[in-house]
Length: 216
Image 1 (cartoon, rainbow, N blue to C red):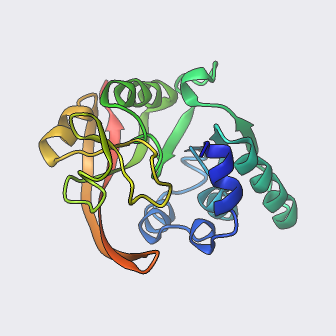
Image 2 (image 1 turned 60 degrees about the horizontal axis):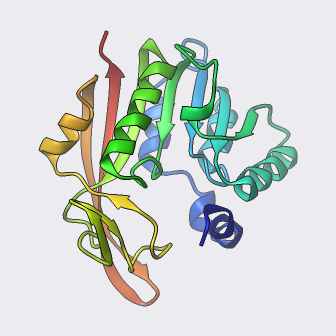
């Protein structure tokens, strides 16, 4: 499946319409007047975009899936919220240097090989203001998808047991995560773990949630 096809299917799944509680808690601790500009990078159908707009942030939502963005635009019209949407990737989005007080990349940029992931992280650092926040997630090597399916390169798989079978996943241990985020200060690092129902099978989920700021 392409991301367009995946989001056409997943737009009916209530999970993707419910904000993550840790994301909600983090942004509730920021003042939208002091840190107004937020990028929802890889927004999907926009569960966090809608949440952030409702909290008073000035949000820009981007995703490479036209279907996902079109769904978000319909949701935006229903909510009557004001925010910007675009079908693009940050690495192709000119004019975003030092623009954002916060960038959220939730369950998105680890869908790449490690080299490309580093390029995405560099684009985030460029887009952030010097004192901006970066909220980032990536699966650990204890996640139930690690080692599943075809290995593309070390620690990079096309898992057959993903919610979207065959999409690229890069998995990081703590040492590797610190290396990936070498151009950031890590302020908070949480390991979020639970079981979820994958088509009738209990599957273990293990995810890093990192809050960072760019190094000068």
